[in-house]
Length: 314
Image 1: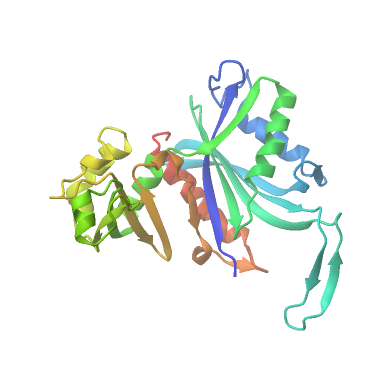
Image 2: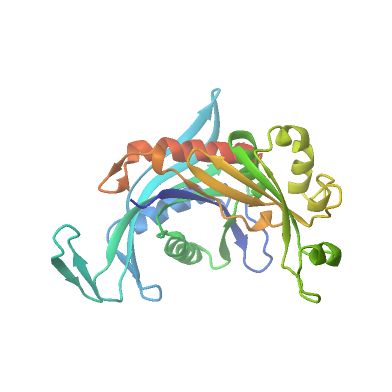
């Protein structure tokens, strides 16, 4: 069975000439939330064809709501489902039990699959929201989804640039620091001194790529060094100054976590390039291999809430 995941992106609308972010609740008098609803209506009637990507696209169903906490409206959200698939190649569809060819797919036939998505826009003067897109094994919808949304926005105002990128990494890392089990810490040194290299019989003039100092099951490390790691994440401390190790001058730190059945390595020297994909396979119910709306919707709402809070947006 393929794993089901969700990938979290920050979403902004920029002015194409100045690269200035628009406030999402005031795009020249209209909110991005309302524009997004128009986008969904535009693409909900029939499949649209993107010849460049050789994919078809349709928004099947959606619903919107307001998230409240302590009688305060914090953000607007939309949860919907896209159906999309690729064409442009032939294939044989074979029954795995009998080995019989059930269908010969032609180049004009598209393999269409459903994917859930969520848009969350904080109330007030926010210039960033969240876009959460479901993945299914190796398959995702970011490219086709953002292609159609970007085209729709430019049809409204040619100066609107849709920007989707990695969400603020501190929000994601904090989630692991608070909830996951730290399996090991790897302190990595890239420039190995020649004396240690000679002691282990390496050829003179040949440099190893790196060596590691590894702590397995480092109980209490995050409690004792949590402040230093937070400073490193925020760019207030160099990664090689989180902790001092005698006779080992490291260049990088990698933290290996386990959260439920999911493993994740966080590279403290490359946090800006984190792609946030969370495996939710064990948390949802499937019908014909696809998530049910009833099981995935609470996860999408919870994820929106957690990340918006960690980013300081609500």
